[in-house]
Image (cartoon, rainbow, N blue to C red; front, side):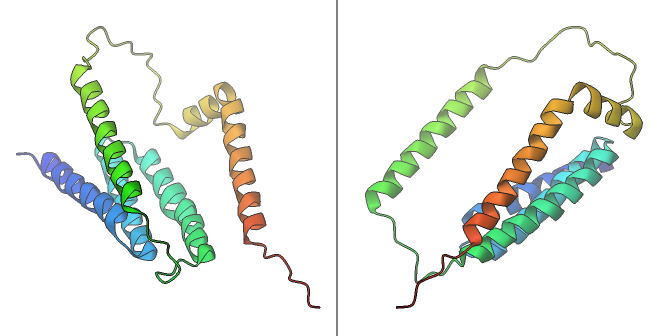
Length: 171
């Protein structure tokens, strides 16, 4: 086995383990920490693909900015076990059934897919170059890039509006 393959298997195990811990951990702060570890291991996969720029951007954007917003939201919601409403048994059963059906549909789709066999069109453009990536992002994909910016701005405004507490009138 080559060193790259061993690193791939280790990163895959870390990614899967931290992803499961993110979902199944009861404490939301611990869940966020596991999600950060999962993001770092995915960045390690990008490094194995020789996509250093993508790995660095992934760490900065997801492990940095998105997780800060996530932790801010968790702290804003003030999740306490005492205030948590227990879900009825029928709701949990329905969620389990929907989960199993979704897994079966995804598995069926995965089994029926066939790899694309054909010639590989190579344009000769190196998309690892930051200059080329910037030109493509800000010329061909300018409108989706700006839509993403507006979407993040709307999310921030929504978070601020949700965090405002209404003043109670004293009589």
